[in-house]
Image (cartoon, rainbow over all chains, first blue to last red; front, side, top):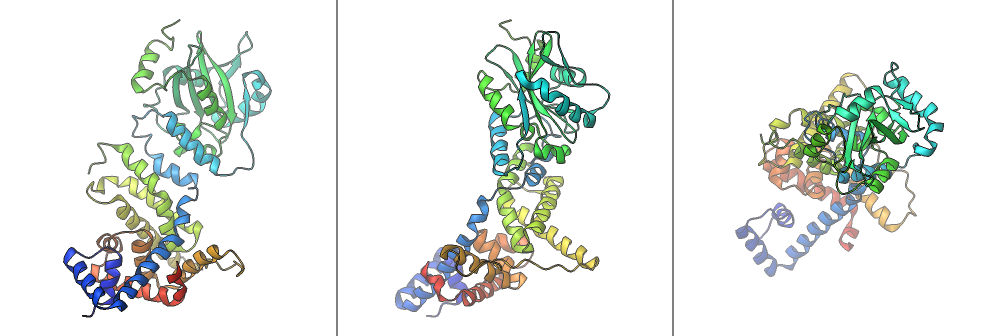
Amino acid sequence: MTISDETLMAYADGELDAAQKAAVETAMREDPQIEKRLAQHRALRQRVHAAYSAELSEPVPERLLTAARGAARTQGSKVVSLEEARAAMKRNVSHARPARPQWRTAGTIAASVVVGVSLGFIMWGRTESPLMRSAGGALVARGQLARALSDQLAAEQTRTSAVQIGLSFLAKSGDYCRTFALSGAVSPSGLACRHGKDWEVQALTQGTDRAGRDPDYRTAASAMSAPVLKLVEGQIAGEPLDQAGERTARQRDWKSAGR
Amino acid sequence: MNTSENPQDIHEQIVTLLPRLRRFARNLARNPHDADDVVQIAVERALARSDQWRSDARLDSWMFKIVRNAWIDEVRSRARRGKIFLAEEAGENIGTDSMERESELLSVQSAMARLPEDQREAVTLVLVEGLPYKEAAEVLDVPIGTLTSRLARGRAALQALLGAEGEAT
């Protein structure tokens, strides 16, 4: 019985139905040559497959990830999860970047504010400074940033919103905190916590790499820089607020139950 | 037409597919920069018309088809502009003394690069991406018999190019 090469190929590719398979197997028992040819097909299949398997673990360029995720925000309804932010971070880390983002904690933030923030806001709005120093020395949000922190729900914002809210959560300190990113070429991002009637900016990082290049496609998760995420993980009590939780917190003007 | 029910779903599914889409595009374009451009175009197109994706269809095949069409468009528009471009030959600059495993992989890729385009597409979809014949034929818009004959010829050519040592693995 002769078995065509195409049939053997289809056998190796798992394309034959039971009857056809049985016919090949019968022929194989009668003719070891057929078995040898089949082995060749299988070996080639494996070899080609293996030669390309390493490509799957290469990091995917950010522009493709944002292209795939880009439209998601306009369709709304999703609050960024910590997992998502971590995953975005992992991908980000895998893109070796020559320069680390500049970032400061509250204590040293003043030094970088002049450079980082003014740079960011030249791009951002020019009209009003989003930050100012309160009498107590803390850096508090003003203007558009303060309004967004108080009013904007992550689920409702569009990707053209000047301020992108990322995670909202209740911190161990009892304050509500929210991460944010600002549009513009430098696109600073940071973490602010509600203290009294002010949003105190706890951390500010300047220019996450991709956000600046393509603000239209930026998502809040991808805009969160590693230091901000780390800070969130250190301060968060439980899980980030979901959509309903955000809404409730806003209704209470971001005053937690304990205060 | 299921995507409106779960708009996040298709985005994340496409994200998951990105490594495979890139690999597929590279096999078409044979130049990683062109490949990523093509994938980006394809992803944007796919999202713009995600309502055309039937939930009972495989998303990978659907996406492969969009990637391939994007590449065909790109080739046509370059031809119109009179631009000549050369594919990068995989493994061209690698010395023969590189690690055995590495050279093994490169020899497969350079053999693939020598296949005529229609055979390379068939081999890529079935052997690299693991699509069933029916799906691969749909991606390429050809009858299944055409797919299998391209696949058989592509395999025979690869076997000839790679020689008998392929059986060793």
